[in-house]
Length: 454
Image (cartoon, rainbow, N blue to C red; front, side):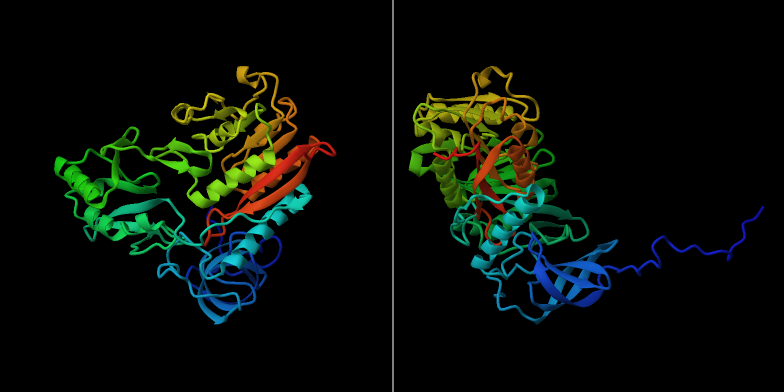
């Protein structure tokens, strides 16, 4: 039996469906406030618009990037009425590059946004406010980034290798001549490095490129198949001409081609840490040192006191703690990092620190190194936080805990768990590790029970 068409028509539940907003459509909006990620928020026809490049109090023309349900993601195409907070972006690529999204906002206002984000997340997700707000830790607004990854893609149609940074909300690659947030030693490599990569006989074999500046400058070239000897020689020649260490990575671990030691130094503690491409390292050297100093001050560990450093990595906190006299146990989930942390301790002559590998999503109190517990604990987890770990603070007998976070939302979630265990949030503050972006890093001090401060 054939179906009849043109009969009854059904309306969607909730009334008439709104017309779709196609990408590219433009809309004039009044921007009311900034979201935590730095985008301007406006409202139109029952929809909430998140507009890249717009500031609170502005009237802008926004172009739709994508829309779903009642949420529209857009980019500011034209500022019709500018905020007094707006400034010209110092970088010529800021309007298209996806690396920095707040260059049109001054540094003081950027810090205010980050502090507000941290306070709102703690209040909304944990119903907490610290007893004391710490002053934000900050460093240079530009020329601070000592590590960067360049995007690389072979354009088959043009027969050309594209080298640069990803565009905002896009996979498009923006070729950059300058990058003011990079340390100068890396920024000056950008134009000649792009030329060198494009001059390879088979540039389509290049996967991505990493730059690092520490005790030396280093270049990692990731390749998807074996490089021809001539192309390898071209890369060696580039490294020698520009005074950088060359590392190559195929299917396995990164391998050094150039001789020399690579790492970074923590001058205040007379500590040198070896590093190799692929390892995690804080990109902002000055803020990193200030962060370590504040963490040690907040932990207030007397000489000889046992301290547990969870998610310890290469020993960024562990080694300064040990140099200050604490007896440190560092725990990390990646075996290669545990091995390098141990080598770093040995290189610096620090016998009062020991490193172990452990799955930090599982119970810790039964581990042999847990021993009789730790009154002082330091946490520096990845973006997804440390919920399983903080649930075990009672079993570890923790009384004083410093939590370093790169995600205020998971910090707030974990803070609620700590509060339920009787910890007080006594201090919190922002670490401005990434100026010119809305990325928020923070530090919080938790103490067990009333009158726990020392």
